[in-house]
Image (cartoon, rainbow, N blue to C red; front, side, top):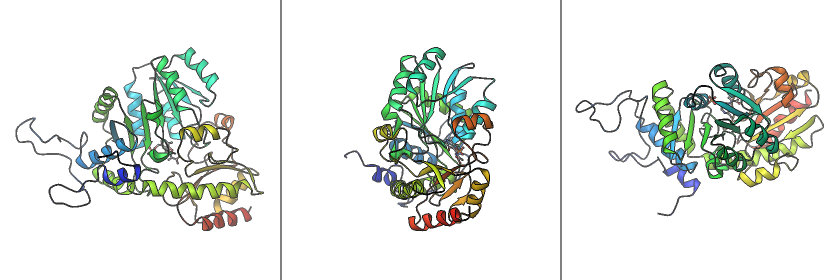
Length: 383
Ligand code: P1T
């Protein structure tokens, strides 16, 4: 059969009817363990921390969406990141993008600094990055692209090639684009990581993570650690993601359509200082985005004219946009990175990057766009 298109894979890979009953929806194997006929003789499943048939279906689907040979689904995005860090020999050097999710920054700067050495650098500046990589000789380069929350775009192909030259691994956190808009392994990355909690699940009812890779060796090392350390996703959560993922393609198109209109609206608004959205020509890496992404996604960051008081007024008055951490669900969310998702980054570091008190992040949902813009307009009128 011809290679299936994305819209078909999300529904059919891992979504095959149950062979024993014909049930069109896969069963939830809500079990912790599996019966063995003789010690060590089983049907490939021993214990749900290591394997579960519902999770295996999700892994099969996610691997196909990232054009990967393997996928491991974990209990959260951060637990996937943790496993990658445990895979590196003690004392490894890691070059990490300077603008990453606050929880990733916290993990690297507060949990692992006694084990590894981290350098946070601007991975959009390739010349400077190359100098730093050649000087540091890191074991791993970690990029989020586009970044959370500033939506900076890094060149996956160039950075992966740079890493390969010195024998380093490249990890790309692809959470913001989802596999629908970007496939980092196709550009040379070694591991692609997702917070499944976000667009992949899409319904704000699951926490999960995933790592996709082509190397059997990387897969085996990470699988060993997942089993040994224990952050496995529950069968019910895997089933919910299998359900949510079926609409990933239609949802991503709708997120993008709405986000483009909202970005245009904000761009013209007299109370907005600056809008950052990969679909706006004013985005500093607009051309690179067009080269490595198939779309521009549902995330927008903008600066309100003023400071914390103006931000608070705006955030207290939105109604459809819920003021909450997280992103990527069908419903629109709004976040204040400095106080909420990126609070664990020290103020001077945060402000050095451009995460000020007047920065607002939108996860544009798939509601009617006029209703969303009406909600924003009403909140702006209260400032
Ligand atoms: O929340 P968890 O599933 O553990 O995923 C962590 C994570 C990893 N990578 C990126 C790019 C992320 O945005 C996140 C989680 N982010 C939020 C909760 C947030 O509101 O930004």
